[in-house]
Amino acid sequence: MIESFIEGRIRLRSPLLADKTLAGRFMEVILTIEGVRAAEVNNRTCGLLLEYDTKRIPMQKLLKAAPILESVAELTKLDPDKRFSALEEALDRLKEVLA
Image (cartoon, rainbow, N blue to C red; front, side):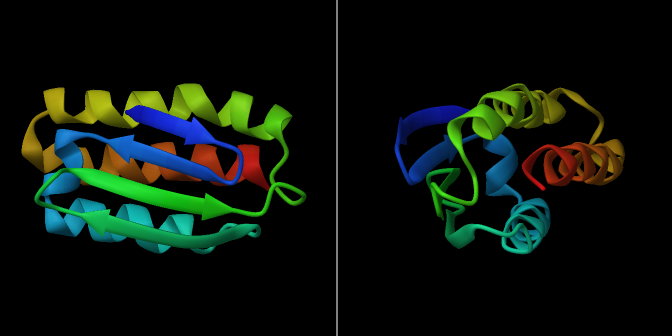
């Protein structure tokens, strides 16, 4: 899921992001996390660019969040009717880690 990372920016890529409903929910929740400045989804390339404030979201928090972000890519293996609830669970964990 994490394709590239530089301080202040993370690019995520997953087939899950091709689904506009799931991608929209992912972005909606990400933007509520304090320190996230911007998020942009490209459904065609299945990518998301996330910009964040490095003072509010330090590296130690990002390292804890990385496995959660990686697990989101695995949601494509689930039945489509189970993906949304699984995404919600992952997003709840992500918010806890990045809070």
